[in-house]
Amino acid sequence: MDKINITGTDDVPSVILDASTGKFEMSGRSLPEDVSAFYKPILDWMAEYAENANPKTVFDFKLTYFNTASSKIILDILMQLEEMANDGKEVLIKWHYPSDDEDMEEAGEEYSEIVDVPFEKVSY
Amino acid sequence: MNKITTIRGFLDHIYNKNYAPIESQISLIYEGEITHQIMKAFTSMTETSLEKHEESSSVSKRVFHVMVECLQNIGKHADAEDIREPEIKRGIFLICKSEDKYNVITGNFIDHSKLDGLKKMLENINTLDKEGLKELYKTQIKAGSISDKGGAGLGFIDIARKTGEKLQYDFIEVTENTSFFVLKSTVSRNS
Image 1 (spheres, chains in turn blue, yellow):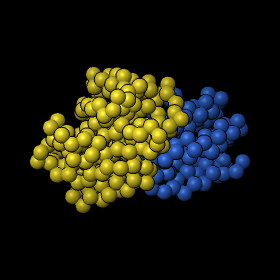
Image 2 (cartoon, rainbow over the protein chains, first blue to last red):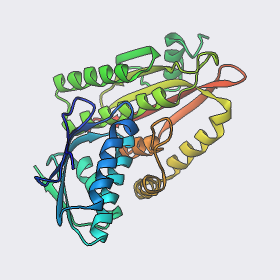
Image 3 (spheres, rainbow over the protein chains, first blue to last red):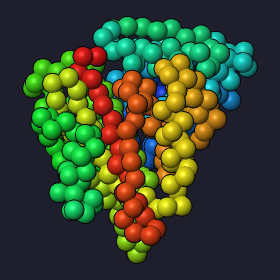
Image 4 (cartoon, each protein chain N blue to C red):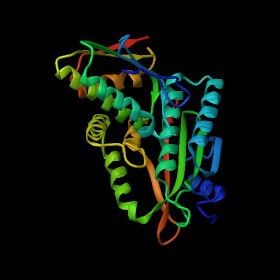
């Protein structure tokens, strides 16, 4: 499977999805002009990966800011990971947030209440 | 009375309504097309200015957040004054600072056909407390989907949650088909 490697800018996050090295990470800011267009290849990739996922997937979210349209897509990604866990794969979500950013911590907290998948909050 | 859709008319209105306290400093006011590039330029200018004034990072982030949601709302949803140019999303944007808060105030056209829906949504948000807003947010994020316009239907709920303040707004009829929607969001500087 080809990997996805997007270098972030001031309005889109950096995204690495690499099944061979087991690196799954989104970092930076997400407020794209067209949220559906930006995330479509990412959601498609995740759906394809889920068909034949590694025994263990650790997904790191290191976002510093995302708008509400992106928050819906992040939930879509988390739900895809939940489905993989339901299929018997080991899945861990690591939600990294700046130690002084209550809002980002709370966002992680809420996602962990919505999806049923191992969720670790990591303050930095 | 100056027309609400001009900067002069808009300023008259927001001072009359006390959306902007008379002693507040306006740090940015803009009237024109609202595009993604404009949104990025304004948010970046404001971030730099808040940093320079040593505003706390949580206040800066909330102001940034409110600006993005307000400006993206206009860029995606605003209607046109002139129905022959539906693609041009114009609006007025203002940010002002007073001793204890930042106010972000926007104005844009809305077709009367959408007025009831918008009013109901805003009224409902304003009846809810912190827990109620959280529940509404969770319900909407689970049930909703990204619309053709690229929104998730979460913007106003999120502004109310992030600011912890009621949304203040009103509608001024401009033509028989359109009104000007004025919205004020407040970010406390003590948060």
